[in-house]
Every structure is written in structure tokens, then in C-alpha cells.
Length: 288
Length: 236
Image (cartoon, rainbow over all chains, first blue to last red; front, side):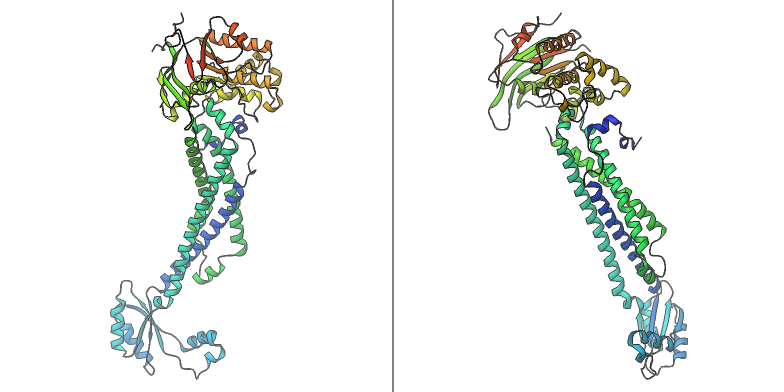
């Protein structure tokens, strides 16, 4: 059985005294898992939000008409340009409502000039630059603006935050591994006499390693599940994704993301066990 | 395949710790399979170092060691446990696992060899009875006297009926009566085919074991005036 080593016999358990949870390992792994899960959830939510925003503006452009240009004629000409899938005039009331949010009641005042705007949706694969030039010919003085340009800084920030989250997860994983290596070496030092006796009467390095591997695996599993449960509770109770949901217009985490988050504690426990096994074997092979 | 007549062969073996002087030098001897040996010599002569080479806790810094017909001086680390399981060792300082009971200490070699608990229970109880510790099976070493610990250590060394038994002052902490009983245990094992090497200062023990041969060390070198240790007589 692949996980048979996790279930040691009572005599094997007696060889390494000191019950589980006696050392700091489960607590360290619980804290690391908690942080890794929160950061991973934040990173995934940001990545999802960025994808939603990007897909919403990818083919969307604005045409700002020069003062005095006839809106209806400009609308008709723009609609006739090949590659333009849909054109809508932005109502002046909507623009004034938007301005009011930024400028207060003065923004809605009728004496504040607002430009006439058209919103264009281009067909996928359409040449935006050529369409821009064509519209400039059809409506002299019109400015052709990509929504992506306006929201570029936001998307770049979201992208940077996503990579930052990934970097933090990597750093936390390295820190967890380092903590496990220290715990494994500490356990080896504590049980040095027992190990020497076992070696002296014919125990292999793998037999000795299995004892430590099992103990650290159980500690890691306990720590990672506790940390994972705490992270899940925090994410649910505090509604950490609410702001992102508002930005993206949908739940910040999909079912795949939730599955990944649910599996992470087990991945961390597995990684900790592998690191412990490698550290113990390496230390034993350095001994005489 | 026929087993070689020598269970241990040392050829020009030397040992030094770190950069210090050689503690063992130019050791050339063979231990005949099934024989009984006493290793003697003054304190500091290198007896314990020689035993360490024999039970594979130390590698020689020069020369060649063959155990059970296999060259082991430079054998890979992974190959050694299988040979260690064929050697029983009684350490001068007992080296019992302090947090295990006497029973578990004696059972340890069998468990390491992969025996089932059903196979272990009987022989361990029998062995503890033999060394007079039936009623102390559940006791941990710190609660045992020096003599009792010594007997647990001996029981652990012989429980798997090793081909080679190496004992460092095995009767140093027991009374004369127990020393005799232990010696009888060693000779009984020897009659069953185990090669026994006992390091001791106890001349009485040597005198009480007819047929045993002496291996004498002085200042790290072997005293072998007759050459019997280089070419041991084959036991009929």
C-alpha cells in the first residue's frame, strides 16, 4: 500500500518517543498553510478579475466627436465602417451622472460642456488601427480611443499583484521547507543515540528514515489541514473576495480555484514529507 | 556454495582517528568459522577499536577486511546493514534504547530484520528467561541495575542467533554466577556454529573456556608468536 508507512505498528511508534504536536512543526506548518492559502486565494481572485475586465474591454473602443459634430451622422458613418460590430452613442445624461460621481453636483450642471461619445464594439480580429483611421476620415476631428489603453494601468497592476502573490507563495513554500528541514535535523539530533543503536544492529537508512518521515508527515498533515481550515473560515467569514467580486461582476473564485485551494493543504503536507525524507536520508548518509 | 573457513580476515589493516597516530596497525589475522576467541590486552591497546572494525561501525584507514567471505573495507554504505544483521554485538556501555522496555530492546534486531510480532514474542520471552529477566520484561533500562542492563544487551545480541558474536567486556557488570551463566550461553551459541569473540580482562573467564583461542593486542598491534591467528586451524 502506497501510504502504508503512515500506519506504523505500536512497537515502531515506541521507537521515537514524544507524541505528535510536541514540537513547533505542526504550528509552523499551520501558519504557513494559512498564509499560503490566503495569498493564493487573493492571487486567483485578482487573476480572475483581470481576465473578466480584459475580456470586457478587449474589443471596445470610444470615439470622441469634435464639438459641434452631428451625432446621428457620426453614428451612421461609424456603423458603416467594416469591422465595426456595434455602435452606441453614450447618452449625455449618463455622462453627466458619471461626472457627478467624480465632481459632485457641479458635474451634473448643464453649463459644463461634455463631449459627444460613441462606444464601438469591433469584430474579433478586426484591425483597430485601420478602423481608427477610417473613422477619422469619415468624421474629421474625431478621436479613436481603446478602452484597453485607459484601463491598461489597472490591468498591469492586477497582473503585477498576481505575480506578487505567486512570488509570496513560492517564498512561503521555501520557508515551510526550511522549517521542515530544521525540524527533521532537530529530531535526528534528539534521537541520535537510538539511530546509532538501530544502525549498529542492522537497520537500513530507509528503515530509520521511515520512522521520522511518518512522524513529520502526520505533523505536517495536522498542521496543513488546521491552517487550511482556518484560511477557509477567514475567506468565508470576512468575505475577502467581495471587492474583487464587485470589480469582476461575478464570484471571485471558480470551482477549479476552490478545488485547487482545497488540495493545497495536502500538497503542502506531501511536500513537507518529501522534504523531511530527503533531509533525513541526506543526514544519515553523511553519518559514518 | 560452501562457506569459507574464515569468517573474518584482516590483511594489513590500520586504523587512525582523524589525523592522530594509528591506534591499530598492520593487523593480519583470520578468525576461523565456529571458533571461540578471547581478545585481551592492556587498556588502550586498541581492543574496542578492533571490535568497531569487526561490527562495521568503523572502516579501516588502510588494509583489507573480509567478513563472511566478502570484502567490506570499501563496500557501499547500503550494503552494510545486511552484514550487521549477521553480527551480534554486546557493547561495554550496553547501548540500550532508554525509552524502550527490556522486551522491546531484545526484540529490536528481530523487528529490524522484518520478523512478525507472532514470531518475536516467544523467542524474546525465552531469551529474557534465559538471562533471568522474565519478571523485568516491561522495565526500561534506567530502572534496571548495571548487571540487568548487561544481560538485556547480551540477550539482544544473541536473539537473532548471529554468525559472529562480538562482546566487549560482557561480564564486567555481573556477579560471578551470572558471568558463568553468560559464558555458558556464549559457548552454547558457539556449539551451534556462532563464532564468538569476547574482549575481556577476566582471566577466570578465559580459563573456564577450554578450547578458546587468545587474540592479544599490544599498542595497536597483534601478538601472534605462533602464527596461529594468521592461519587458524580448521575446526573439525
